[in-house]
Length: 191
Image (cartoon, rainbow, N blue to C red; front, side, top):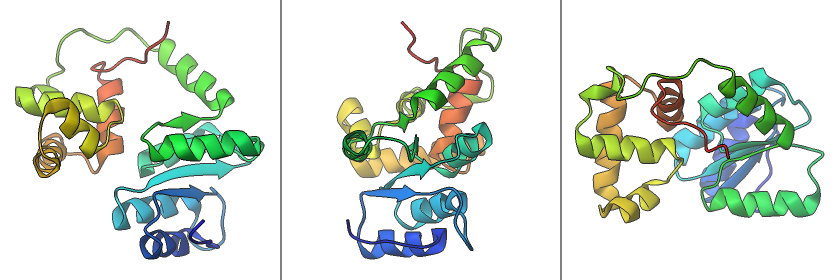
């Protein structure tokens, strides 16, 4: 552990000062709440992964945290060994959710109408290479992982990500993931 903070703004400062790889953030904190804290951490240290750790298992919090850039959403009832494993998995790029959250997310997705096949019009403006990068972003890959998979340097990946976000009018990678799923470009792997 490299630091501890009482609110989201302090957490962002600690994440930068301690060069944190993973930040555990509560939703409800005095002053700057955890959702805004996620945004601040990601702005200040984009390579950091932020796991929400809270006692509030509410869909609104989950969605707001994901849109802010959170890498997962766990409950404070998570056993210590599982929490340790979750921190390690998050550091390695895995998105993690409490089982109850995962169940509700999957149920809400499955109950939506079947998406149209092909590339949605909004996404059709991407070049084939940008589309490859977009799909990798949607799978939750980091720039390093995208570079390794697509045989590109990390600086090139960053350039593609910046262009993709600008072309699609998106604020961040989380919005890109949401667009990929909302548009039907990506589907959860349900077997």
